[in-house]
Structure formats: structure tokens, C-alpha cells
Length: 129
Image 1 (cartoon, one colour):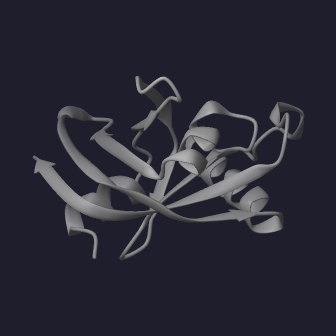
Image 2 (cartoon, rainbow, N blue to C red):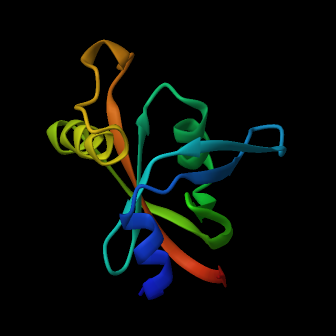
Image 3 (cartoon, rainbow, N blue to C red):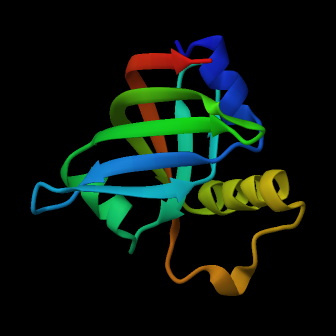
């Protein structure tokens, strides 16, 4: 189960930084939109992006979410991608995330490949609030 503070930050319009491992063993960190339910963090990306290819090879992932109004208030979740979801559900989710973060649907011409949801199960959670 996700800590209440993790859920709170993930459900708000707060940005996350996601860290995955490249084939070379080096880390890659990128900003991303985020959401959550009671048990998992959800990320949405495309199948041609490095972060997706990285978690297909090695499902370990770290997600750090910070409060947009107070960046010193943040949470860090270390876990694994336990499921990927493609198709209409992934496409709908990027529109929902875009509404949350920008107030507009996601531009269709911004999609270069297939959208995919990364479902992240927490192994450790760190709260800095």
C-alpha cells in the first residue's frame, strides 16, 4: 500500500523524476507526469522511449515526486514495474494526465509511437515533508 503522502502528491499536479537503468549500467533520470491508486504509482510513456526499454530489460525503478508549491516536500518510491498496459487505456490516461497538468487533452501529433502505462509497485517509500 502506498503511504497517504505519496498518494496525495501523485494525485495532484506535481511532477515526478523517474530513474531507470540504461544497458550500460548507468542511471537515466527524466521528469514525468504521474498518478496513483492506493497501491501503485502509474506513469505513462511511449514504447520507443529509453525509460520503457530500460524497464522492460530491468523493472527496477525509482520515482521521486515533489510538491510543486514546496519542492522541499517530496516522496521517493523505489520499486518495480509490475505491469505494462497498452492500447486505448494508455491513450486515455495520457489525455487524463494532460488535463491534470495543462488543462488540455494531449496533442495527438505529439505521439510518435504507442502509449504505455507503467504500473509501479513500491518496495520502499521515503517521505520528506
